[in-house]
Image (cartoon, rainbow, N blue to C red; front, side, top):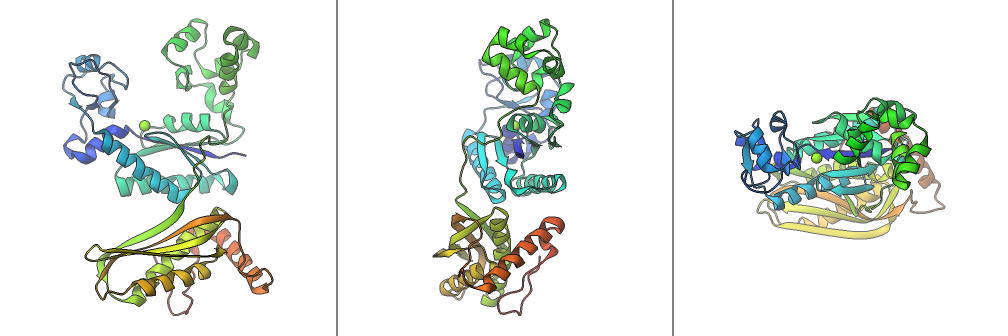
Length: 388
Ligand SMILES: [Mg+2]
């Protein structure tokens, strides 16, 4: 069964404008330019929506409804920059990502067989990550297909989360007004209303022939959508290029031992992420930023592995080899790239390897159930414990 997430940033342009100018917080904000000009509303805050404003409305009409609103021209380059930053965060959660627009993303979690609880947990984590790191609110919908996921993300806006499990698609849609269906615009809505279709359930219970006779293929599609059918695959499957994790220290670090300890902790996280996606990695890189902002990156390519110890072994060698200056370090990071599928053994005929695979499978299961911190792996030399 497919599990698709649809993430939609809430009144995205307005949210970015509020980051750039916090005075806009809590006020009716309209992005779209000169209120007396010919443009349309590109986005408006929820406060502005109270006045009946919505996006795509002619801006002059918006101005008549809400003359006290704050009308801003917008900073498109900033929107693009934030959109890209959101994408980077999402890629830390899954490689199976499709960007549908500047503020909308689909993610495919089908292959993991997660419980509903786990899916909600992932969705909270993603929302928090975006909120904490970028100060942007988002809504997420989770459903067995893209169409429904999109309807779900819209269902509880802003800052919402809605899940529809397999088998409940029609029930979920039944009482929704037909305009909630993507693809039903004003004109079609009116036409369908005139024929007595007000709710999606009205369409679903009507014989398909009615729609195919009247609208051909589009009618058939509409009927299928009303039954909760939709695409289950991302169209533009973006392969993840890397999995990375980094830490900026509150106070610069001078001790190589301390850096190794942090590196081990980061390794544990990227390695679990790697195994969660059933991948193994061939290229391991580390990043070191000194207190004067000079940044060093080193990488090495090895036989593909998904083993914490094998990855850490390379990472700590790279670290020892690159920490040459005796000045403080303000950031350390690890990056995995150059992926292969599945668990790779370093040596096929090594019984130890087989044990290790079983160990990591068991750790993965525990962490799925009880969270990442349920189990921690000590350093190779055994004298440090991972902590968080
Ligand atoms: Mg949006």
